[in-house]
Length: 204
Image (cartoon, rainbow, N blue to C red; front, side, top):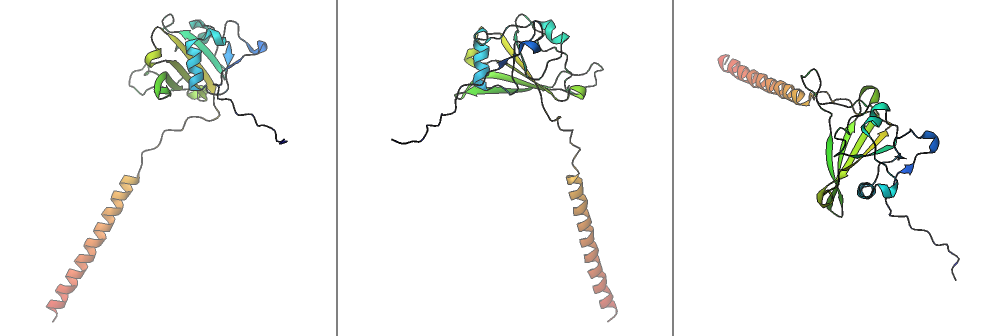
């Protein structure tokens, strides 16, 4: 009989959020926290049956009164709370001439399970004093979206700020100037040869 120990295989189960310790909870606030982004399968399960995993529906005023903390996860019914996006975080907005500013920049992605679109994800990034904030919002898509108005909003405070806007590249202009300089040198060289030949013919 072999004395080798059997190594346990890693679990393929989705990583779900963990309950907030009682000492850290805000009254009537988020019920769960996660310091890592949720897996697609995990989000899908939470959206389908949030009560089973301990997520309670939040009201609109909770996010306006308290700035989300790192790892906070909120559950909304978007049919009852159409303004669920409004919170106390300052986000990057689209550039516009309107004094009131443009809308929040949002990047959309469809997350797949077994090659089928199951979860729609929206990414938003904070700016200024909130530049380390990242918000991801999830709701069901495809065949699972019927009669389901649940939205999960997950906040994380990351360690790096968003990249600064890139300056306009000067490679193109540098390439043009280099080509122009080479053309001028070539023309002067040909002109020099022509003048040398003409001087030789006239002095014979």
